[in-house]
Length: 307
Length: 249
Image (cartoon, rainbow over all chains, first blue to last red; front, side, top):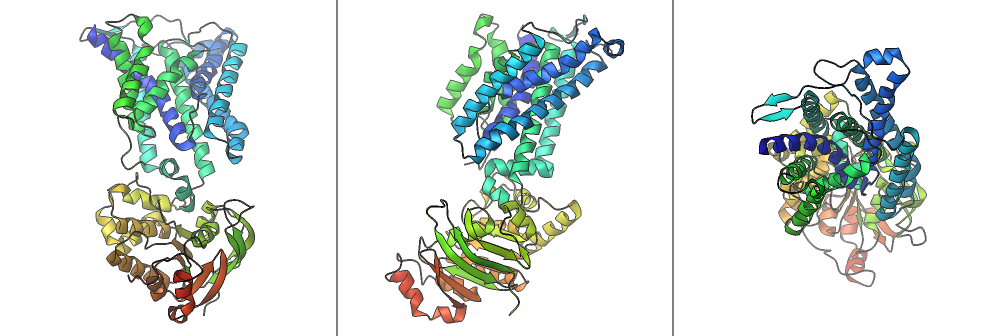
């Protein structure tokens, strides 16, 4: 039981980590709490669903939807993933161009940006409801055979793939932030935008890059969540608060912190559900957050040298 | 004297258009020359250089770099055009390693050129090479100042502007930093430096400009300003608050 809870916690923590990184970017680089980030997960997930639903009208799509090996999905979902990422990135850039940037240029208070993001979250969710309806969807109804691991632990092939993909993306993101010029620019703007600009960094372009990376990670997290659970219009708001908790718990601006905190929260949720009714699960992130803010307000893994 | 490289004319700058801090300030700096901007506290010295670097609003006036009008350029474009700037405080990225600080300063360069500039920085500041993997926050005040200057040099600027490079440093470190600044100017870079430490600033400068109440009150050769009674009057007399006018490096 405990081994199963740990494995389940790691698997769901990996998806949460992808979303939490976007939240920590918005807190540190964009400098406001972006409450529409959760709904970018929904946009990505539904962007992919739009492609998968083509099977109803296209025989070519149906062929591409044939399951790959032990997994529940086919090439069509991979195409859907790309479409979901493109749609989420495009929407994020449009929101930046039409809403957030004009507000920043008018020296809007960060709280104004937060409320704008609330409104945009509602708008995105309503659009999803309008286009896809309120019912949950699944990318695939194929039956998978669970793998039995020592423990005994049962894991679906999809879950293993999701975990491996997530770890690979996290490693790639780490390299991007450490080695690439855009990654270093993002870290500079997070710490000191004014100094970044005199160092020759175009802060507006870096903000756009931040939206691109955050939205792409959110869309990936949304699709992976859809693969392992299901796709629902309110999935974004359901995931948003644990993602914020992970970003704050990990230390604002700290990518490794957000990742570790996401795993920690997910493990705690799954382990506590062994001894408490499942309905208490949503409480776990907040209790953890309250304890950490009381004991260590800078978060568990703050960036060294950050003011 | 060489032709001026950086020319600012009638600059009006500040944080609110209705309340400018710098009024109609004009200056010029030639390649290989150090122009030190002096003045009592609150005279607008930092605001003037920040406005030239693009980090503080400039409401009117023109700025030219060689024969190019750069008045409308943003801070990052000025850096690309050849104007390096070292702010007085928060002038390094404390969460980045020393090497990444330098890479950040060479954000726009292709990899081979970046590598060459890094090698030049290590040669000029060997102390930084030894500590290149350390985060910026692990450096002492003097080392931070060196790193800030090294970062600004990564784009091989034609003009280097420094806002009070001696602030908060020990006299020993002030001497080291100022020797580097002189060497940088001697390599052909035009240096515009705001300084509170009048004696030390004038000792390495070629010319001085005195700002009082946001206006240029006086300018001339550094050697002449050193013995000018106006300076003592400005710093210790009726124009401004007492300052460290006589501190030696």
